[in-house]
Length: 330
Ligand SMILES: NC(=O)c1ccc[n+]([C@@H]2O[C@H](COP(=O)([O-])OP(=O)(O)OC[C@H]3O[C@@H](n4cnc5c(N)ncnc54)[C@H](OP(=O)(O)O)[C@@H]3O)[C@@H](O)[C@H]2O)c1
Image 1 (cartoon, helix red, strand yellow):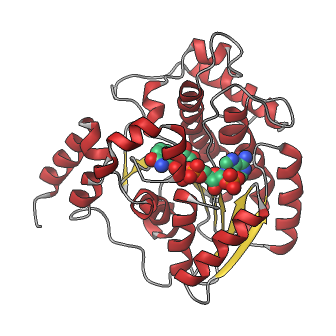
Image 2 (spheres, protein in one colour):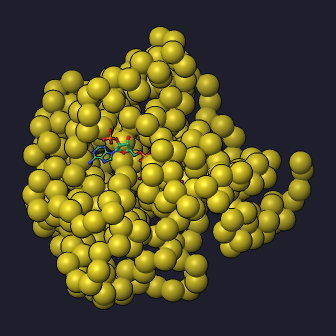
């Protein structure tokens, strides 16, 4: 299809506003006619990529497609048997893939420290760190350090892991840190209610609310890390995958997943932008953006909405304190 870029941009943006169209399989089916080119074949040969939450779902799909591009893929999850099974399936799909299943519960800061120490010994140059692990617990629970679980898994653990793996990221050319957020974050503004109760101690706990709030915080995490890692030459982006068919969505939102089953993306399509951001040279020329379907998107449905910088600072300092790192300049 050859349409002027002003027309394709307008269609693309309209798809985003009509959520079921842009988020479902309809989005990439149309957008692939004008989105940027696929990463070059073999573009990741010999490059190390760490993917958290890679025992199934979008993480495993991304890991498989990254292995197809030649990457050495480190699959992270909480359970070695599930990871071994995932790695075996990946090797069947991509013969000769270099896949390394490695246990790390990213919500547990001790596990993150131990994993980072091992990785720095074995991987001097890390091309990409992909924070994909996600949870939507039905009831409030806490990590090993007593942090609410979605906050620990989506935000605090990823911040510490990034900080500890910085030397390996800095040593690589064109390194990237990528964060798999969710379109659900649009429903959770970064406001004083969130800032005052980051740990979700007030009111009745709803997993979907905790999920949306911490997915919003992942966007803040991406922006703050982009500033923090700029001098290291490391690009940082967050993104959302649309709605993709995975065990995770079927388990945590069964009614929703059943209702939209005919238009769900498959996992590879959900992971497409993650793979593109990891491998495409142009993805390292910007930093701190929020993407879907290979295009930066607004972080709010009302693009003129701006977040209070004082509130952002307060939230970021609180997150950094939970991760046990010095706070970063914004
Ligand atoms: N599917 C969608 O439509 C959709 C939409 C928006 C956003 N997302 C986001 O995309 C990401 C992947 O979603 P999915 O649908 O593929 O989910 P999924 O099928 O539930 O997979 C989640 C993965 O995360 C791992 N995991 C969970 N907690 C972990 C922890 N503490 N440490 C390490 N690994 C952990 C799980 O492995 P173990 O249980 O083996 O540890 C699993 O491999 C999530 O961040 C999710 O929020 C998905």
